[in-house]
Length: 135
Image (tube, rainbow, N blue to C red; front, side, top):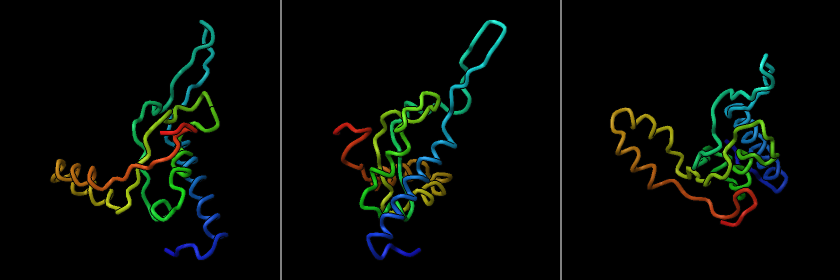
């Protein structure tokens, strides 16, 4: 991994991270689909309902090293007001600054309570704005 060496590199990293966060949630969230039936128009949910998710946790080098983590994580919410996507509505943003989520996933197979305790200790809440509202 190489860290950005100048403002231009920081901008590119930030832009790519925001787009990746947006696209990854697009791939994983459910959708509302219009279905025409003999009884008329029906709305059908396809995929996961993530609207009420309480937390979005960012992990990985570009997030850990970003000066604007909340802008990256905000892209997982419904910033474009697409009523068909079931994205998180107003989650709290957290970051895995120590990059331990993968290790805690492995630990949780043998010691789930210890892994949870460690995760809770090292996850950092992100301050600032969530969906344009002050926390």
